Length: 111
Length: 114
Image 1: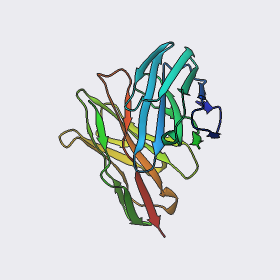
Image 2: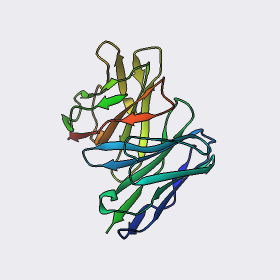
Image 3: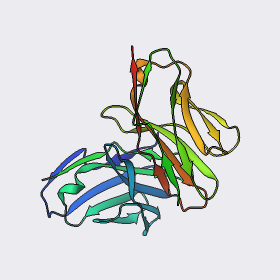
Image 4: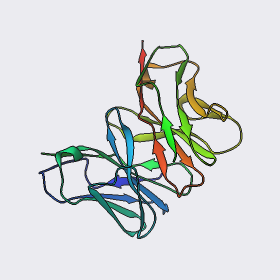
């Protein structure tokens, strides 16, 4: 079974804090993604990575950065958290154009 | 740029009736199309995909979807709805000319009443 794991299910941070969301996949997938899910807006792509140290901006990259130092790990960084970044964050991976596998999600609250 | 639209926020169907959840897309190349389902407090689960070949694709839990190139649609269907099908459904598209970018729709909440 493909497994995508995320470091936390729930996270509460204060405005201005630096926040790290970690994601690990165990299927040697080339591609990894970070999405945020908000009611009525669906899933919006923040960043994706198609190889180690390679990344591309998605539709809403502002306020976020990413790091992919190893193939299995893709980190999302909020440099200075703001209340409008309160959301559900979903990590995913796939190999080429094939099925995308999702992690369980991290519900982040910024107060 | 690729995009995907799910025109209905909510679909309500009586148990035992057929259901349809609509999806339309826009890509510059050939589309790869997907449907995912999210049950309450659960992650997204893959239902089915269209890459090439037969326009009618069968997936998990008795769902199927029909790829219509002329209408740029990929509607999700099931002949007989179950209460347990109640969930949030997402359509997604990848343009085969893009570097793996996959875009999701806004989601449709499917509610099946007994």
